[in-house]
Amino acid sequence: MIPPLRSIAESDKLVLTVAATMPSSTVLRGFILQPTYRVESGRPVVHLYGRLEDGRTFLVRDHRLVPHFYVEKSEAGRARELGARWQVPTARITLDGRAVVRIEVPTPADTPPLRDRLTKAGIPTYEADVRFAMRYLIDHRIRGALEIRGEGRPVPGVGVVLEDPELAPADWTPRLAALSMDVETFGAPAAGDLPPRLWRLGGAAPHAFVLELPRGGTCLPHRAGSPGRPLRARA
Image (cartoon, rainbow, N blue to C red; front, side, top):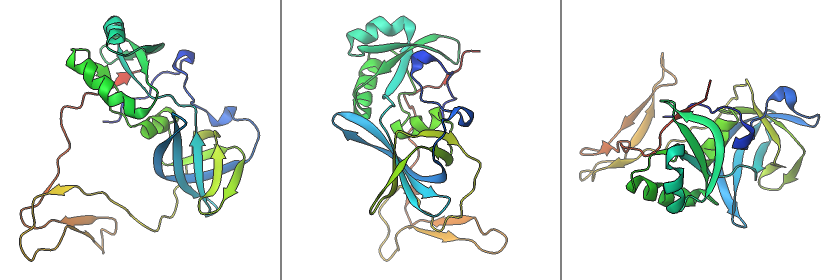
């Protein structure tokens, strides 16, 4: 479940940008096709790959987001003893109104072992399962289309590359030409069976698809019991 957006607080170090407050510079509009990140010199850098409204491809690189999750403020001391040393005050609270502190880590890969250590000690964690690139999009309220304000440079094989630009959500629907899906299944197919196949329906349902599995195959269920918990903004 996507957690609700947090409150805008200076202590949270959010990079949330509203279009009306963007400085004057080149404005581009595009659609994100792949959000991910890379670790460079020990720091994570958000990478947003997509296509601009004029047809060019783009890459947004942002160095500003720090990987983080939350624990209840009452558990801050115990969490620090277990390795959660970078703690930042925040205005966020849990869904039942409990104050929390923000736990920062050097890279996204440092979150799971620390989260599991805290969970094993009986310390609840919040939003510790939100992927790093998705956290960036949530904080910027971007669901797909976006407005980019900044100066880009052309890079062969990549397109327009923009370093730490200002972003805002945009109301735009692109004309996409390809669909890519990650289907996870298990179960050995019977002899002579074909691998899983995806069929597109025509006629009255041009956007409907049917997944055909081999005999004995089953769609892999989503893992239950996620340790991450949502927060809500303080009113």
